Length: 98
Image 1 (cartoon, helix red, strand yellow):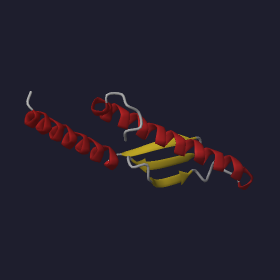
Image 2 (tube, rainbow, N blue to C red; image 1 turned 45 degrees about the vertical axis):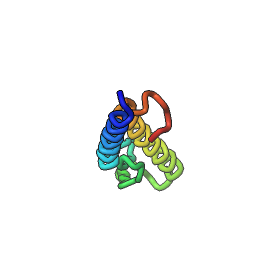
Image 3 (cartoon, rainbow, N blue to C red; image 1 turned 180 degrees about the vertical axis):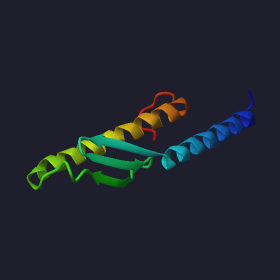
Image 4 (spheres, helix red, strand yellow; image 1 turned 60 degrees about the horizontal axis):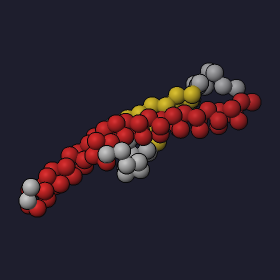
């Protein structure tokens, strides 16, 4: 394979990677923990946090804080998982590329 063909193939692969990353960035993910729901996009930006107000009492603020952390960590894990599934074919198993 000549260098020009290799460059063309690399450019094609780069374009495919960027398209996949854009799709992931525009996806919405949801993490839940008891009475807390967190939504984030594929860029790991929190979009929304919902709290089931009927379930929580004023004395449970510390528990609420813990549930928010758990829900955020869950949604971030989901984003990492989907990113690895879709982008892993481009990075050939190299972690931390995206």
